[in-house]
Length: 60
Image (cartoon, rainbow, N blue to C red; front, side):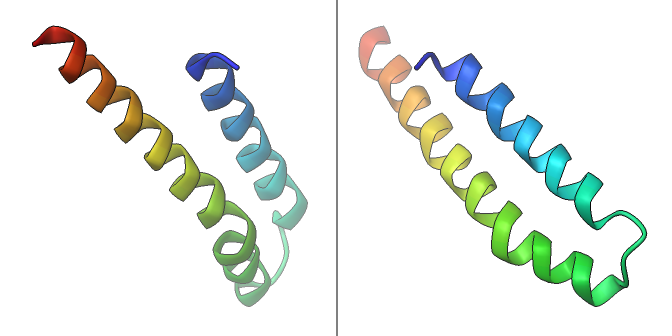
């Protein structure tokens, strides 16, 4: 899957999670963000770091 597609899908999932918890108590929103959104963002960070490393290698 292209990196841009992966990024957009993760953002879409993140927005869906936020839509699900909108209006819920703060503790519910926090739990959803910690349990569901954080892994998405962590995975995205790994993908972006790997892509950046690949760009650096091909530039040398």
